[in-house]
Image: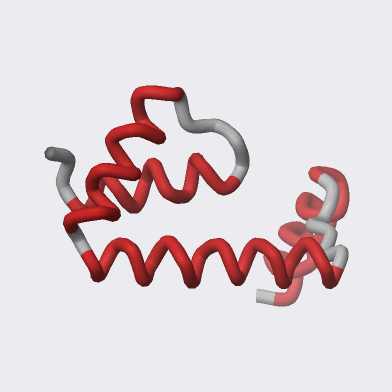
Length: 75
């Protein structure tokens, strides 16, 4: 059985379809046994769903770099 830390990593990868079949299988088995990780997985799914519904967008690389430069110049 995988550890809770490994389950958390796979859970996060799973949310973005980055987990392999084997990892997803390991996660399902772990979630069946571990109720704490099961709750984490449910909350993670809800958060992802809410973010998708809100159509949140991150900053582009250029915008991030501009923000860093502004912060450095003010500090």
